[in-house]
Image 1 (tube, rainbow, N blue to C red):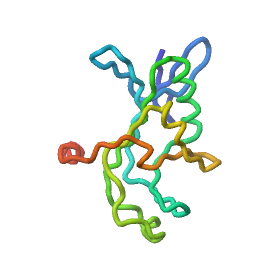
Image 2: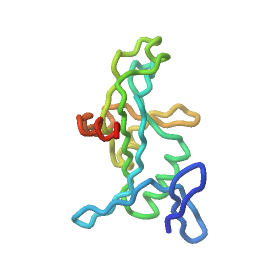
Image 3: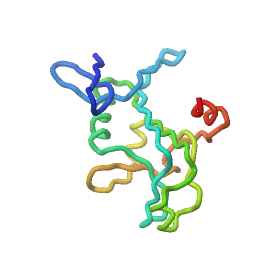
Image 4: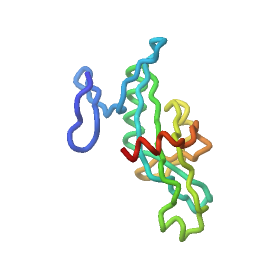
Length: 147
């Protein structure tokens, strides 16, 4: 059963007295394959100055919840990040990042992504653009956002 999580987060998966935070969407492909997709809209990647790389990510506890959901349901979990602004934040620019942040759709199957995670050791887990599949930003995405 999927139920609203309340004010803080989206859907929850409830089974046998246990509840987990679930990804946003349950999608069925034409061939019958099901996917659980979590969608994150972010303006831009963050600049990680220690390694000189762009990073995007999620909260560590969501990562742990999605691992449980992936195992419990046998339905692959996919993370999808939509980065729609190419201009980095002013703090990142002061730290010497490139003038343009990667944009577009960045995604991957969670089981693959957990093997490529960059960990801050505290609250967040990250991925670099090369860890994710990428579809560039195209004109129709920008037009849809303006409506």
